[in-house]
Image: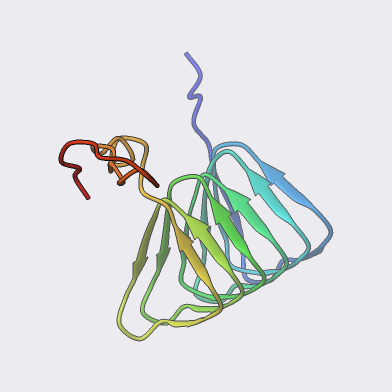
Length: 132
């Protein structure tokens, strides 16, 4: 049977201008100028320089990214990573030494969102006790 998972690598001597799409796993160690879109896992290598949007399932950044990152799950900025752009993720890990210049929006996973509902007092009324 064929292996359905594939790991792809763009080495440090590769430069791409334009959109990049992939499905499973990709490690980029070269230079990309343009949008990167995937339902898979992206690793931005130590030598990588990305200029553009990243939209993936999850990403680990060891190199440089100049652009916004939007991931469905986890974003990890390693010790020497540089991110200049906004970030949206369910989980965010930033190691000591990483540089992050931008805004972050970290949304908890769906299970954590199912916390007990907050009951607020009504605008008028003599209702019983309320929880806040």
